[in-house]
Length: 103
Image (cartoon, rainbow, N blue to C red; front, side, top):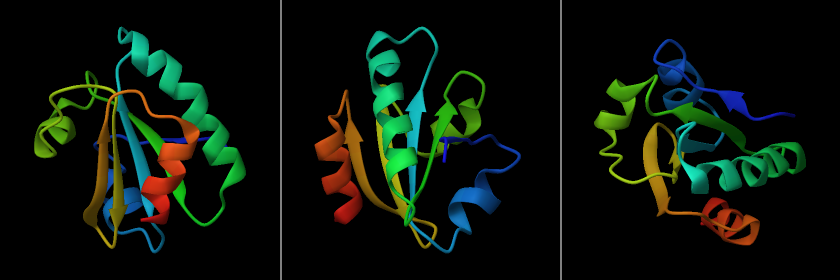
């Protein structure tokens, strides 16, 4: 399944109220490392069914980015039961993202 697009309109219902863990890639179109992170996130979304995976454009959704103090991108945050359960800043390998998800 392709990575979902998270926005202010669906963030609470899709991420914070999700019954399964959610990995959110905070990114921007102008960010070079984000462009490299995107395909890795898409691969994980296709491979993993026990976690919801999606992306949030920090320029379009700056209120949510501010809520989670996103200062550098890409930043990936794992949410479990509506709470931050893990965070990684900078370009991450698929293996390191799997480790973050596994906890």
